[in-house]
Image (cartoon, rainbow, N blue to C red; front, side, top):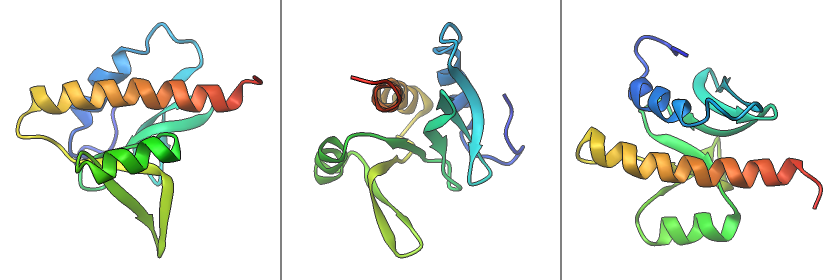
Length: 118
C-alpha cells in the first residue's frame, strides 16, 4: 500500500506490512488519514504525521516502554492515550525497522487478542 507521497517512513511501514502477507485478517488501512495496519478491521499500528510508528499495546507495557525512554506518550487533543504509544525513527533505517517490526508484531498480537473471545 502506498500512503500519501509525503508520508515519512512509508517505505518502512510497507516492509513491515509484508510480514503480515500470510495473515488473512491483516490489511492496510488508515488512522487519522495516515497509513496503518489493521487486524479484523481494528488498527494496531500506523504512522504519525512526523513519521513515527504509533502502536496499541497493553497499558502496563506501554507505560514501561515510555518510562524506559523507548517510546513516547500519544496525546489526542488534551487526552494522553493509555494504550497508544509512539516510536520515533532511530538513527538509521536498519535500527528503526528492527525496533518497529518487533513492536508491530506485539501490537498485532495484542489487538488480535482483544477481538477474540478468551
